[in-house]
Amino acid sequence: MPEIRIAASAGFCFGVGRIVNAVKKLSDKHGGGIYTIGPVIHNKAVVAELEELGIRSVADVSELKTIPRDKIKAVVIRSHGVPPHLTRELCECGYNLYDYTCPDVAKVQKSAANAGKNGYGLIIAGDKNHPEIIGIRGFYEEHGRQAIIVANEREASDSIFPDTVKYDFIAQTTFDAEEYGHIEYILNHKHINFTTHQTLCRGTTTRYTEAKKLAKTCDIMLVLGDKNSSNTRKLFEICERENKNTFFIENLYKIDKKLLKFLKESDMIIGVTAGASTPPAMMQKIREQILELRV
Ligand code: SF4
Image 1 (cartoon, rainbow, N blue to C red):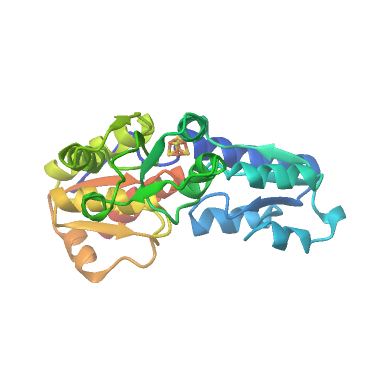
Image 2 (image 1 turned 30 degrees about the horizontal axis):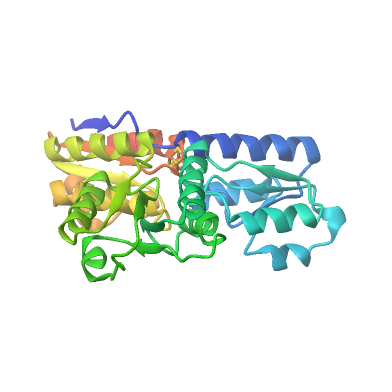
């Protein structure tokens, strides 16, 4: 029989669990009519389940304004946070607003705002298109400067940092600690005058470290989650570096043929981890499915 090892840190993180519970409670209270700017979490199955409860997302405030006011019972800021101008706009519109920015993200927003207030430059390690980064840079850029965002060491090498400026260096909460260290090394190598602020989310760092160890000791590694989730994609990259038999599983009912062949072989050690937006039920289901294949 296969041995299935599920990482203790797999699945919903604190910030995601908190907002999913919160929107469900709001929906219970108001009977639906709950809106978020962007999906509550990056997981299609959970988003579909929430839609059934009257929890819907809009792309932006202009779309929200097209919805009749009496249909909107509450507007929720999700765990990624938003730029401060957006919070002000939502307040000015008079919506019943709930801010569920994850406390760890709020700390990074504060660091960015401080850099702006102090007149420092700001270097952010992260994905410039990710909503968390859009929010964080908004806290900095309202002080009249532009942040420099680098996704990896190559971008850090290619970027130009005016050397008359003193910088603060921060990261997206779900950034990989190892990559962060590599970028820091490049900044030092370029003689940039900067101070590093530790902004990585502890839960995510633990998840990545645990997944890395697990991937090294298993025959195959499964990463469960949605391809739209940046932390799940990162988790996959980390595991794949350690174990070439790493598979990304978005849908338990569409498992690829190479993986099925592996799963049917005997005495395999199968490692399982999952992104911060993967519901706990998916971990239990994959265990049941693997065991069913072996019957
Ligand atoms: S990954 Fe970390 S920072 Fe992001 S929502 Fe979850 S707990 Fe908060």
